[in-house]
Image 1 (cartoon, helix red, strand yellow):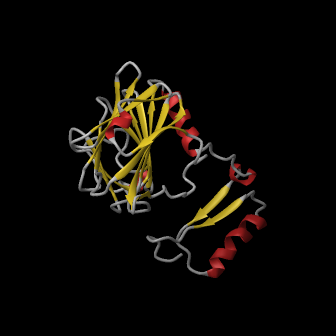
Image 2 (cartoon, helix red, strand yellow; image 1 turned 120 degrees about the horizontal axis):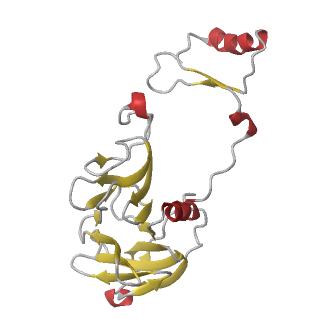
Image 3 (spheres, one colour; image 1 turned 60 degrees about the vertical axis):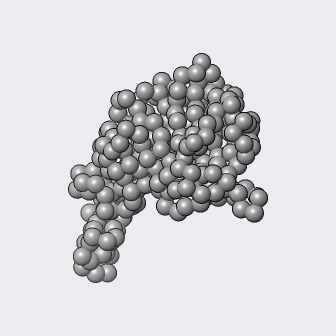
Length: 258
């Protein structure tokens, strides 16, 4: 039981360094699938190596250069190297939707743009997207990504569900926004930062090349008094023969007029 529901556990190998672990709640005996939301580069790229509903299936399962084993009371998935060195430990509450996991001995990185900088340990993060972020004036808006990097040699991407993080205790805690949803988690093992980030790109995809105009000059404006001012800005650029590849008009939330 995980979160008050029986689950089917699937272990898949995405690469020698990355294992995918999926917990699918059972509804009327059938597993609830992970939603296809565009967050994965290739949703079916990982090769499934084991799936089952009993603990004995996962003692242990080899996935690339990693192994996964399951222990009960509470339901726990141990991700280790083939030499038995712990990489990550995912502990699920049998009745609540929460999951706890190992924090690194050193700094904890990741989680996207904004929020407390550099080491995320000692903080809580509701993963709220938008302008109401941490120290907005100097650190920009919050653009959360459920991607964690432990500086002692691991990365973890929680593809599904979305939720909040608590790093104030000895272990990290993840609380999904909605209970009863499938868990879809990728764990990466490497002490090389280049490998960890390359695996993240393997999971979520490489960024597209920017459009040609994004490499030019862009003029941004926030508060605007009305349509005449909007039209006056490109007119000024044209009259003065100034180069401008894009005009940006921002008017979200905090601008009094825009």
